[in-house]
Image 1 (cartoon, one colour):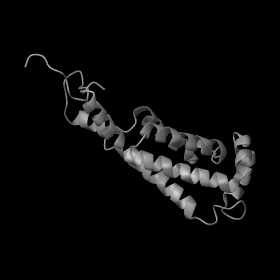
Image 2 (cartoon, helix red, strand yellow):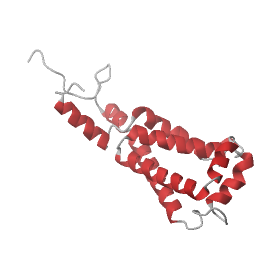
Image 3 (cartoon, rainbow, N blue to C red):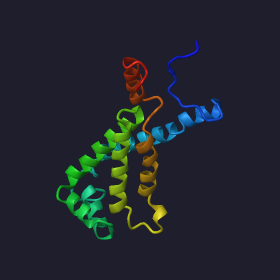
Image 4 (cartoon, helix red, strand yellow):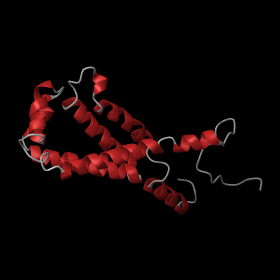
Length: 176
């Protein structure tokens, strides 16, 4: 066969090495995806099952937490917005974390899920953990940075997105 259509989906390195480095590169974001997915699912479920959290006032409630950080937040207007309906905001964060975690873990609309995770982490950094000194004591900034590679790369391995891409390629003859 002198001419043919190239059917592989991975671009080889320039030196032709398709060994362990190529495999490691393809799987590099998988541990991050699993960690962030499981963590955000756990965080969402933890909020939904904590009876003290889903209240507008009282110890451990979302309302008290937001009132406590209002004056130290980078953007107090975000805190004021959440204080208009703290319970609704608590549910929005919890269900948002669940959706982001599930989407990331199973790799369905993975870039969109990662963007959602980055936005949740950004909003928490600008409100809850903004006053941490030094800044690296707060974990929300680290989570924000961890989401960025997944926003850029998506979920190429063990994901519904990869299955959908593969089926689309089969329908179009391998050109998409």
